[in-house]
Length: 97
Image (cartoon, rainbow, N blue to C red; front, side, top):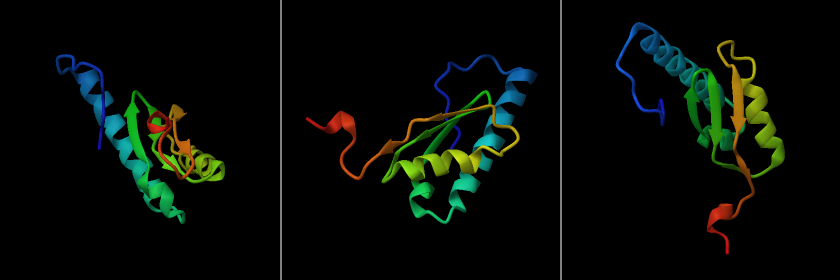
């Protein structure tokens, strides 16, 4: 699941290499999370852009939010982590009244 929200530029060698590197990084992140002993981390959505990984979704505790970040930190290609995981078991904040 390689996700990008940027407009696609004409395909060039550098752009293609960057996309390939992001795809590989995303696969590595997903594999690490899929192998976690915490099943909640297997449900995290991930996006990657230029070496920056964004984690999205919901986990039940702040501990698991931190664990998700620490599990992927050692991946060599990873430049930055944007941890947007929400904590709690209820509805997302945007759905609350």
